[in-house]
Length: 281
Image (cartoon, rainbow, N blue to C red; front, side, top):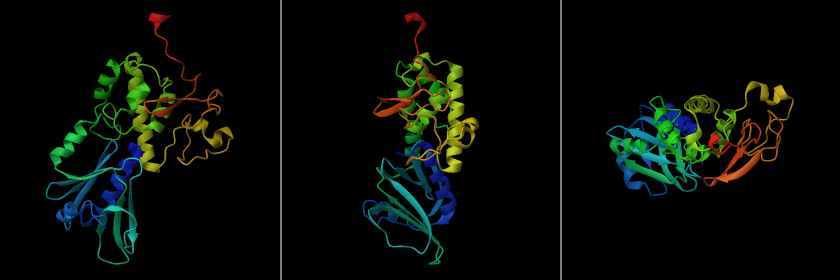
């Protein structure tokens, strides 16, 4: 499933492509047909993202709520308008020149619904703070984490605790802060949480800028270490994510993995030691 930086970049790209423009809206697949007819010919004001949710705001108080899920795509193209291919739920088109048409096709999303601004706000209110949003209040996440016996790795993947963080950013941010993924939330001190939040803000913003996830510090890049670049479908240079049994870039210890909250957690057992409460020592 795309992580929050992907949705934020998509929202920015959609705003750049269609913001302030009159759009033709259709649903070649037909499942969004009535809603598309209502929106057709309206002006798309902007696109926005909160966590893994995307919102297209159209004049007249209309909002299209999109959640891509695991297989959804929303692809923007400029040039000759091609016939729809596959199950296109939503198509946006702007521009009259046949050679300079901008269009975007949505496929495979688990959610594509027309909602009101009030319903949009309700969706956002159910989410935890998003490190990529200027209005985010990290104190809300801290309040949940500091009271919970659940593991910090589980809590970071809970979109009601912190929105937009996926499995890659979970693994990498915890490594960078030397936090074991199975450490209870109640054991994390406020200063460590604040450093974790600040790291996510920086890493995810960089992900928006480059459209990939890179988390290693300058001294651990392939060039600095004299190692081969990472070869993985997900791309990007990382410390632990999908590096099971490979040596840690920092200490050389073999990376471990174990299922956590339905996804594989990755960590270095030396850099991220198991938490032991003083009460049990």
